[in-house]
Image 1 (cartoon, helix red, strand yellow):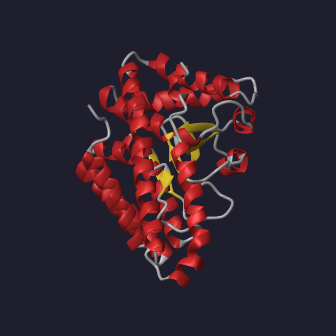
Image 2: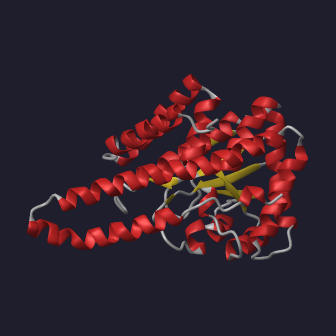
Image 3: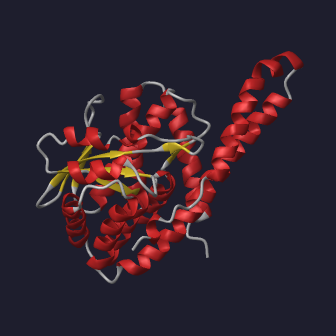
Length: 303
């Protein structure tokens, strides 16, 4: 049985097109995007939110680098993050200031935090620690005790990285869309209050870690905190583990289909035009290579 349904894939395709359509007037359209997402989630419920979370971690290959579509996509992931916190019973808003500030604020009963959603192209090679903005997030807390950076699970370092050392020494929680999807499911099974308490427990475990670059140590602490919180999480864990594998397959399919179409377009051009585009073909080939090498990194297996 597939966890990621056809409907989920179609929803993703719809939103990629929607973001492409409304990328013109940035400020106005960001608001329109937020409202449309909020309306859809109210109508379709938590299942639709979980679909979004499982498939939103990669920027579509069809969006050019540094284009208004790419910027709008970033706005979409911020809005999605804010809606996720609201669904867990927190109050949350997307901040409008752009530079040098976190993108999302969230307020629980007994704590508050800032958050940032990360998304990367599947064809993006080596990401450095600055891409994850862990250090910057510490400076963007603006008096709040906690900060959270949400990343696509398969793009996170699995062995050793400065981001984990920065997370524990600067008290910034590195989290994934998969873990968030699990929290949404848990809030439905148990209660929103319980999910809110669990987020707090996760936040508290980060600064208690011995600062280290070791990925296993970091994820062992986060995963054990979640699994130890309630027996009900065990089944949700298995489900999200499966979903993480399927989401990679779906993301690869989306990216490779686009690149194959691009390549075909070039091959059908007149000789001169095609020569100009040859460099692009080389780039397409190297992107395909990178995309094919993406696989499940086993972070949910650390428990």
